[in-house]
Amino acid sequence: MKTALNKNEEKELIDSVERGEWKPVRNNGNDLLRFREAARETLRKDARINIRLTKRDFFSLKTRAVKEGMPYQTLVASVIHKYLTGQIA
Image 1 (cartoon, rainbow, N blue to C red):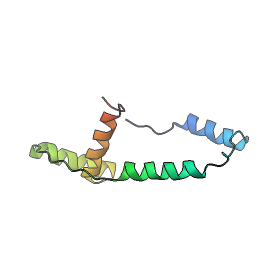
Image 2 (image 1 turned 120 degrees about the horizontal axis):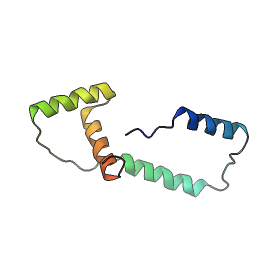
Image 3 (image 1 turned 180 degrees about the vertical axis):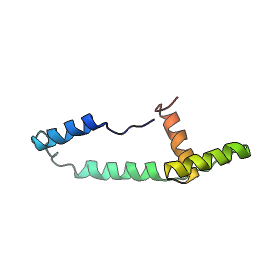
């Protein structure tokens, strides 16, 4: 479920940047505006759902959310998003 880089991948990226292998992209103003808008749209929560759960599942959900350090509704939205995008099966 994790998508973070492992330590070897992170080190390879840092080494690559330090070797000067990364170059800035020219004339990227339009792209930046487009990417900002896409990010804004991605983060916008503009639809609601209602779901009925057993008390046991609801308690487990809230407990897991606390362990993950996020509100339970955010956890539910994240799991649904990851499922729909194929990040989890």
